[in-house]
Length: 322
Image (cartoon, rainbow, N blue to C red):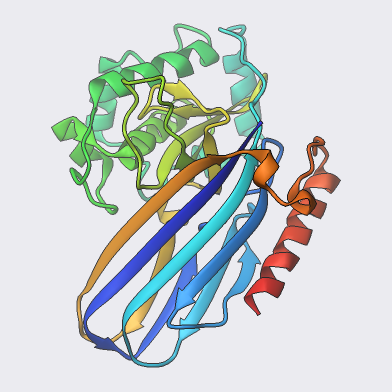
């Protein structure tokens, strides 16, 4: 297991004063079977009362309103997270798993993760790309997932600022370059097209200094894919880095695509334009430096344990913010 300290700073500068800002923030790491958010603090300037809620998939949402004039808005989020390595996956499974996927789809349980969404939807270019990377049912579903993860990584070039947050997948497919969000949307759209439930994960990744070929994502948030197979459950795959998700990936939110889980989303009153700057710093932390009351090296594997930890953490966050 590994402990991480994460600092995520966001600054909005307005060309002239605005009279009010209202915002949702999704920056608190999740607590689940593989990771635990030990502490989370969110500071807002100008000062505002920050409230906390959760959505239908238990993403933590902080929200606030600043009802007075201001020319900039600064958010400072700090997290302490424990992440455990997941169970190793087999190299392949039985090809009959395709039939099991069809049975699972027929129940409607995974409807949200199989249906097209705003940024992950079929297009003619996506169909051409599927044929190019040979994503089909000729091999078992798990092997197909691993191969697709690799082929998206090879086919697309990671290039910062090559697309915008609201770019459709055809921009990245046509230019053969994009950012982690594009890699993830393309893979999700291909998986859903093949009948494999897939969802978008926002979070952070700590770079591995031993892997020089790994994409440099320092100073930014990250995105990857989770795909569902009845034989394995949800599997995390990172097409940007051509890797499985492990103890260097820190999950924040689950959505159908980026539109569900942006780090910040809000509105302001005023006719001015805004400029956004973001900085993320992740450092691995030794457990000796963590206060004992935050440490619990036991395992939390039952639903009741997860809900208890999540509820108590939310209460502590609300107390700190009041």
